[in-house]
Structure formats: structure tokens, C-alpha cells
Amino acid sequence: VQLQASGGGLVQAGGSLRLSCAASGCSFSNFAVGWFRQAPGKEREFVAVIRNSGGATYYADAVKGRFSISRDNAKNTVFLQMNSLKPEDTAVYYCAAGRNLIYSDIRSSDRYGYWGQGTLVTVSS
Image 1 (cartoon, rainbow, N blue to C red):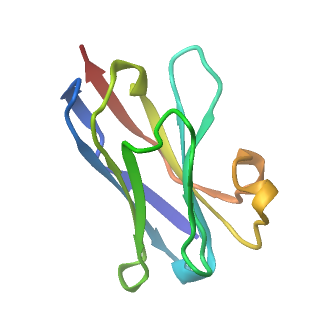
Image 2: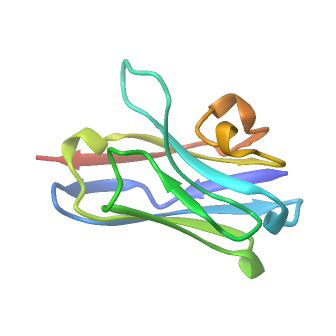
């Protein structure tokens, strides 16, 4: 399983970006896919996840109402639409995939077995 994250860049506060996570070597529909981020000097943190069965979505409080995660299983791709971006959203964003995740697992990065390389999002004030 290989994941390729893309779509990062420089944007002004209040702007939008859409990140993509493309998978190869697997059927993405069998995996829950999450986004995590890591800002300079900080630990990696959970952002959002979309479950494989049923497609339920969950968000960190810091992004709820501004970010939206979705998936296109036919294209083996998961998207993270980020609106109303703030300078504190600046980070490297990673997508990750995991199987058989239960609810208590979905915010824990160590429950995800596959990771993309990260894409940098910079939000200027």
C-alpha cells in the first residue's frame, strides 16, 4: 500500500485548499483514511478521518465546521477540503490508512499502518 498526499501550498488566512491522498496497491474502500498534521515544534495531531464502511466522518474540534473529508473509492482517493484557513493550520499534513479501526482508535496515529509522505500547508496572516 502506497499513499501519495498532494495539494499543499501557501494561502492567505481565510482562503481554501484541497488536499488529496491517492492510494495504490490496495483497494482503498477497505481502509479508514485519516489526515494528521504536524506543526513545527509540535507533536503530530489528528485532523479528520473517514471510515471505510458507511463513510462516517470525524473531526478534531479545531477544524470542525471548516474542514471536510470525503472519499472517491472508484479513484482510490480521499480529499480534505480546508476552508477558512487560519495561520494556526500551518503544518505538514499527512494522510494515513488503517484497517479494522474501532471508534476509540480513529484519533490515534499509531493505529494507522500506512502513511503518505506529507504535504506542507502554510497559511499567512
